[in-house]
Image (cartoon, rainbow, N blue to C red):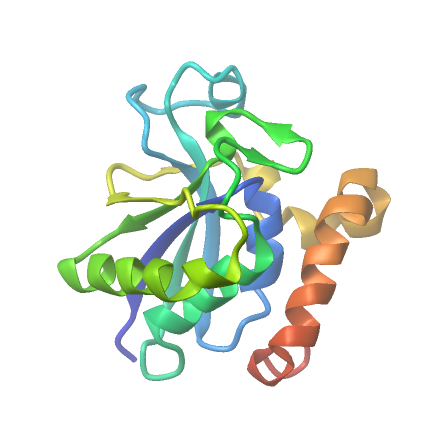
Amino acid sequence: MTTEIATLAGGCFWCLEAVYDQLRGVASVESGYMGGTTPDPTYEDVCGGDTGHAEVVRLTFDPAQISYAELLEVFFAIHDPTTPDRQGNDVGTQYRSAIFFHSPEQERVAREAVARLQPAFRAPIVTQIVPAGAFYKAEEYHQEYYGRVGGRNPYCTFVIDPKVRKFREKFAKRIKEGR
């Protein structure tokens, strides 16, 4: 199996991870940080808003099963790409909407997706499309957070659950078997 990497930021990484873990063709999802200037940032550093990093998910996917364009279709369906530095009550540059591309082809596909989807939104899409930089894996307690904690955390219940439901309704045919 040949795999590729996609790195996306769309608010809290727990939200994105919870969705992409269920998507057929995605082999792995890691929560982390990208786009900043501080080497090896911690969660506390990033939450302080001074490192320039965004909370991201790094997806390893099989392009024979799911295309990069399809990953982006899900991305734009599960977050609001029109709010700069914010997703719901999560506010700060670390929650910005961004696509960190790993190749000229990914950049092209991302720009085409924004142009194609813009008419569906009332406000301009502000998603940054920028080259991928260093990826810093988030602390272990952030990995698979929703799967481990889920309904025991009010944030998961009120913020993540609706995103997962929306994903499962809209993309039911793309959910991994047994999910």
